[in-house]
Image 1: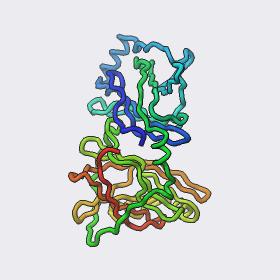
Image 2: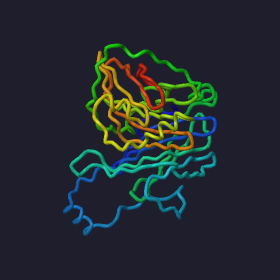
Image 3: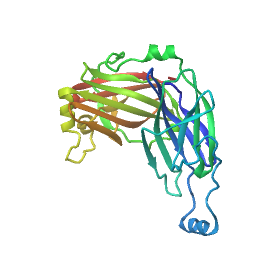
Length: 320
């Protein structure tokens, strides 16, 4: 990880935090989540304010081009001459937030890719339409030597798995609402959780601590015949059954259980994205679990569709 995560900006009209930042020799990627305050007005109050007032006063443009008309957060890098290089997001999603009586406001999450950058980067954020001014931040990054030494293929990365203890009783985890991951911090570096030759792998791409919760991002990849098997089951026709066996075997990606004492609590399949075809499969999925009191996340990881039997993985928590 190139950044420990957490909020970069906290203003009345907007907060912006780092979900994940990764440095390679070929590129630097940063995923940001911007969240606006919750609008607590009811329908009557909104209609009254619309009739009475005008739009929000836009913030001045200094680095943004005059012709730019955006609908959400814009991101750029500032070069040595003071010129801003604005980038389009390579992926993104938006959420409308809670009802006016809730706690979470509208959000915009986006992944940006920049040329390879080392040591530090001047990051520019702007959203003038909502009154958020252009903001330049100096973000510390790993040096080139560190990136060279820590970058490796998922097929060659170290793998530390153990047998699953006998006598575990299996349950369905009670579940947790996803936390505000942009306000958390990275609790462990990325690692390969499970692997089979060069044909299937389960990778922990992000582990974020937010108060008493942990947010995990799992990347599952399969190739060749194993990918064909997974793709055939990627869109099951039968409705899911909420029992541990079904969660473990259903797919299409890997399943995870948290070990507590002599019990394994399987985490329900939630939202995510997946793609496949031509003997390839890839999925990305986020899970939320309770942070263990001893700061060691004890997991059972399984992906039966890809031929990955149950293994135990213990992840010490701290700073990445």
